[in-house]
Length: 344
Image (cartoon, rainbow, N blue to C red):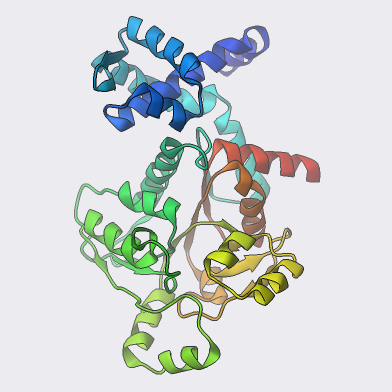
């Protein structure tokens, strides 16, 4: 199979490109239920003219149904996707990307989903779906799972399902809140995960960034102390990865602090810590929740992040050396592979 794919790539590379495009269209339509051509073109970053040609072809093949309300996948199209899905990674080179990144950073597992989640909502949903499966497989009775906030981790929560209720599993926020949209707060994500799995959850109603006096005062509260102990006992941590400067501004840090973080060479941010290109922690926020020592001791650390622009940031956090699993997208994985190649 692999030899045939390599021969096709050499002789008729456009064949695999067309196959990949049509797979993505079918998969996106299936996930959407019913979708209009203009909306689909925008989400796949394709022109309407190119998309029309592809969807007309797929309709002729009996794989798509096109009606006034929009496009939907046919039963034949759904069956085709189910048969093709297990081969997708090897067919389009994602397996090689996964193995290269896994080997280079010494990770136990790397999953690469197709697309660029910065520009495609479908790719972001696929990230959430893949990470949800990883988390589901890692869960054990009595587990404590600490989760961070953000749009990508919210997708993980939305796609987390179990066949039986996990009544003894507790989901908790890894840190305080950023004061952004309620839907993407760690508290909301922890409660969503618990509700979707039949588990329990605890909420941490404190801001992420605290001054020394506020921090010291809150840490004297018995309820806060007890919850922090639970958070720091987490066996599993699920976190996103952000650009250092973007995250500093989202935390509404003073400009002097943002300049200081930049001067320290911060490139990436994860669970409230700022990392430079080599993976060293150059700045950390004073906040209630997980500490660096807790991350180091955590049994399973799952990073979920994608987008071409985040390739360097993801690589920086992977160099930190305490992640076990990385779930990313094709765009970020290709950037990471380029960085690995430059260092070889």
